[in-house]
Image (cartoon, rainbow, N blue to C red):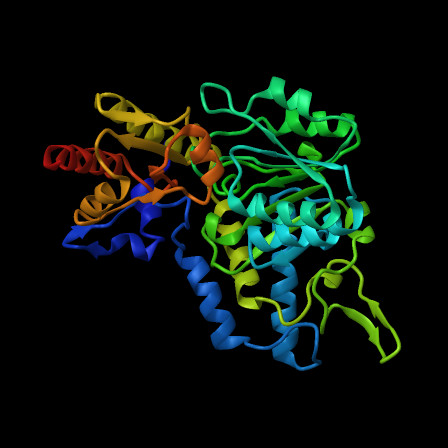
Length: 404
């Protein structure tokens, strides 16, 4: 049964806006998604009715806030099929989650000559932290190259992953190209040599079902704002065996068991990784986003998104001066137009109320590998987008081509 998209769109107030005299066509979902009313209500309810710090007081408001905060952790654990809620660590987002692993695992478990395997498709957030680890420890970074179709070369990956490999860190879905990476195969390769695995799921959780136990990855990271929750909240899932071995990254209040001037002992999971007052409202609202998504037929929504991508790809392919980059499968489509700078096109589209993204998409090594010095134009869909949105984008591109 096809989802009732017009009804679902009414849950997202921002989509009703008029921008530059036109109804908003929001196709920048890979950067951040819009928020449904239940998420907005959860934020409002916390600040209006239960605003208090968590875990630190015996009064009623603190108890209510703590119960909602920890209930959200449980919702996220079920959403990704984590074995236990304490294996879900709150972070500010994917970037902080990767940095936590880089500093707490990488700095303490990697040494000179160890190899870190990344991929050409990675977001800067899954490159720069590992460069810092390599510089500090003497570890070496190896990079999985692309095939001619701008997908990860599995044969090259099999050659790169060796007994010296200690860590594999790759994205599940490319934010720049919308390519779904073969993470199961890569995880299996890494495990065959005893390497630890981290999967960047920032672009996956809003589109695909995620089961961390089925994937058998050691770490999985994602951001709330990519899956209809607020900015400033994210998740690190980790296998217990590693989370218990890893020392805290940030220290201070909340994450301790006891403190004296002579000695500090740290708390149990998950608290030893959550120093200071957390983003309480963000975590609760992320729980509301999980509730919202879990109440929908996600398989039907995925089919709807696929239909939108095919409509967009077909329309772009019909324009002889447009070049689609790679083989998009989820969320995003990147393309270029002969003799047209991506930013110029985006400006003309914005004048028509159409929001897209341009540039390197925090993936400069990928753009360099593809010879795209100016980057690309990226249109990225969510389930609340419509065939009319795609038609408006294609019409806007036609107008821009005529203008140029």
